[in-house]
Length: 240
Image 1 (cartoon, rainbow, N blue to C red):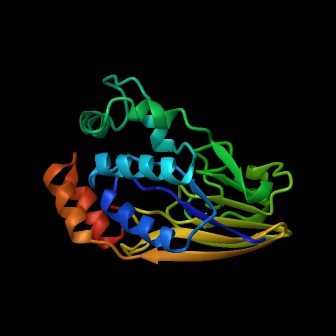
Image 2: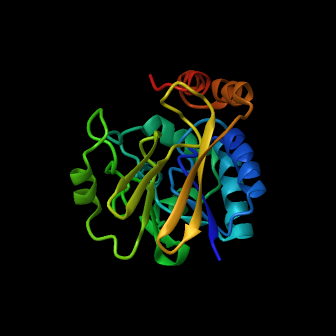
Image 3: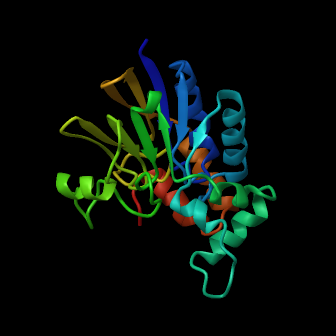
């Protein structure tokens, strides 16, 4: 019997967007769930975003993958630490142990009976972009070079770039599912992907979800580190 897989990621601490995405995912009654990482590094109520992600992990056995900003939350803070101000604020508002938890997640996961391979940047490296070059989409050859051996997988799905994309390379469907938060394409709508299929046959549906962007932006501007910048990206759907 064909299965349904809900794929989401790049929540970036946006409890408002995630709550709306969860409702939409639940309405589709997926058989499996996977969270592609970058769970907490953002400023629209990250403690609420943490709580929601922990709840659905327990309720739906969501597989979780480590993102690049998840790794940042495990860093020892020094005067030279990049993003130190944001990290100090996050550690002050998140429950103790949250940073340690996300920084120790695996880099990849398999679903769909081994036919779906998921990662954040790539299935082995949270920092590397699978489908992007410097400012353009990567060639098929470069994508396959970055992937290496994918075994029996017929779908590879990642996040990291915050840009939706799907491409067929021979028998392999390669997908970027977009982001729950911090959009870069000019639309503030939250994103996730529904995979439906089995064996060698899979369909990809990109889902876009409206949420209360104004409330999220107001929360960020009032409470978050550098909250004005966070609020502007949430509202405009564009990175400064």
